[in-house]
Amino acid sequence: MKTKILIPALVILTALTVIFSACDYTVKKSTSTTGELTAGIDEGISPLMKQEAAEFMRLNTDAKVTLNVKTSKEIIADLNNGTYKTIVAGRDLTKEEAEIFASNKIEVKKTRFALDGIGVIVNPKNPLSKLNFNELKRIFTGEQTEWAMLDGDNKNVYEGKIKVFIARKNASIHDIFRSKVLAGAEFSPGDQVCSTSAQMMSEIKNNEYAVGFISMAWVTVSNDTLDESVKPLKIAAVDPQTLAVGNYVSLHQGYIANGTYPLVTEAFIMSTDYSMNLSVGFTSFLVSYDGQRIVLKSGLVPVTQPVKIIQLN
Image (cartoon, rainbow, N blue to C red; front, side, top):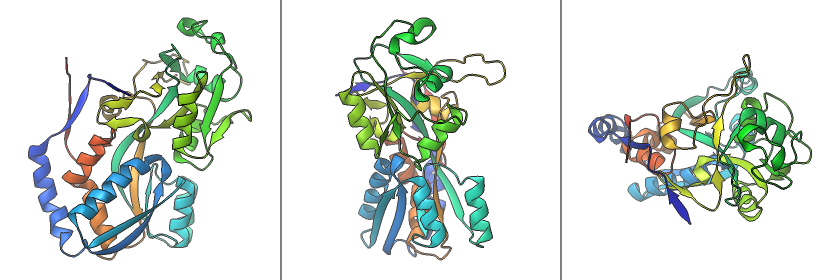
């Protein structure tokens, strides 16, 4: 089951991207598209990266890319200890992680290639359409346990005990959600931890009282077409000083691109290998027109290619 969201739509401006692609990816193609590459991949954006690797190998038949999927903290630790020389993470390095690399005299080359969004999802039977950061904080810290106890327009809209699911610790979206929405507070011990995004989707799909959060990469069928087995809610941030509730914004490529969606994350490919090899070729592919077109199709937002937001009636 799937639903089509028509407004807004995001397109890559092809007239400019052909120039970018010709002066970058194809120049390096002859020396960096053969051999083997094993990379650590952040589980949150693994659907996108599987598509990217498959297309890269289709275009470069002498290349083999193996993706080992783990949490963001695990693959960053693996990059530091040399298990992998190339990783793809759904967030930037923390200050502490950057300091560890610096203390070990390891230089990390980082290339940002996509914007992602963290969606708050509920079961489609849940009639609610929106939640703000205050409500989310109370729900995920365990202060709010009944759907009927919500505030304002949401009060008594739905009944039943809230069943909360969270991404596992060390996952990029776990840390980002806790920082931005919970303002550093701890998740409730009663929250059920999902070990994978696939489990999160399954739990929300099969429990009408459930709520959780997940990368947009996992709820997108193609471009602006979303998986209808779960329902992403409109989200509003809350000003920490004035406590004013902002605008409620849908999980959508256009709103991630224009910065109005409040839970936006960044995807990076990171490497400690500076030689002209398959890692360089794969990195160049991700930021080229072909790689960015896959980002767009996956429901995420390209960052190295010109894009335009258009309104569709």
